[in-house]
Length: 97
Image 1 (spheres, helix red, strand yellow):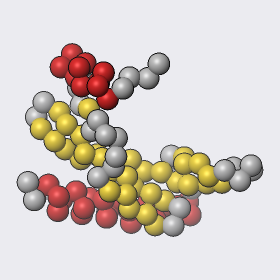
Image 2 (spheres, helix red, strand yellow):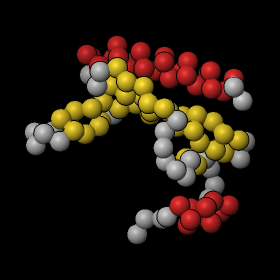
Image 3 (tube, one colour):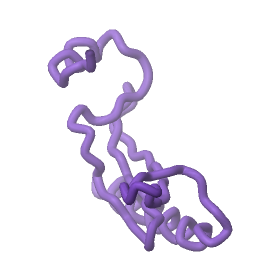
């Protein structure tokens, strides 16, 4: 059984560490080809902060699209680009607070 949003809200005071937003929707997603940077707004006891996850889309033999976290030589330029764009996006949104 997976916890519901209501359960997480009730358990939040007893769960240590940082938490992702309950709605689990990213603040934004940046793309360069098959490379993606997803920026999440999280909360901690010190207040909100942003974190970023990176992924690479690929197609399985069945034709279904998946996301992985391994990057080859040909992916690195796009990875650098979205990492820089993520840094810039976060900097702008932190300054707005």
